[in-house]
Image (tube, rainbow, N blue to C red; front, side, top):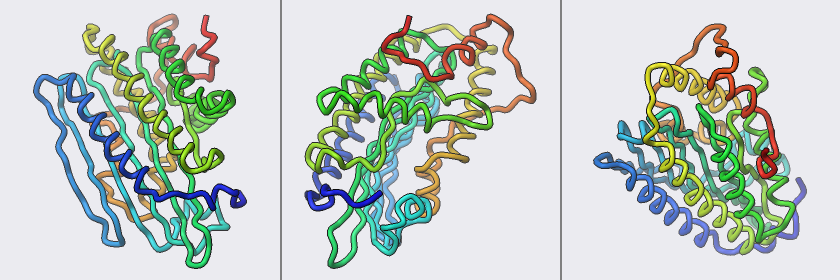
Length: 312
């Protein structure tokens, strides 16, 4: 991708970094409100090459079996291979990467797993304009899906994009469907949401405002689903299926996820990078759900791209 006029429009990234820190705090507070006792453990870390972060992890809660909300601000002297391969014109530049990334693995199989992140990347070279872009999005991975949850999720995604252009939601919804796809399984990871990268087309201030709308939209979209489903009765069958489907989550993160690859290639902090992994997962050989079962409904109707805003 060639440099755009937006490269000359960069503001001080401190505004984005301040928003990321605040968003982390607000998400942690919102999730803790569901838990009678469990709280996030804060793990502040520094990176030898530059920068650091604040990893917050809640483990073994009544509602959330594991939830991780990570803030990072990482500096490097050279782009990792995963970034320079996509943007070869930036080879030789130093970089700043900052953002919030989170994954939530609920205990109740009727509450979906969810992932979100918002991030800023700045590539710099002495004597040249900095090149920057935002990325991020949010997606939902149900085990026992409900159509009204998927519709509400996509309504929230549409609302987050709407003030910034009518084309953003359909573009980023399609990108999410294509990105969170497991080609070796022939299915999407969940019901999608938003995914975007290399985003600078609105100029720095408006692009940041869009990212803020996405980050805030996640908070408001996920909490009502948790509240609605967290008391749903479940047993061994549902737990077994949940662990089986979590295996798909692990497969995607380790094989295809850009953030995981970037973090490992940039010699990031392994514990923070892999906090997205579920605490337990399982693989079964040749598993096929019973026809017309709730488990079959997931793969038959929900793990393929759909226009959820026109759901029947």
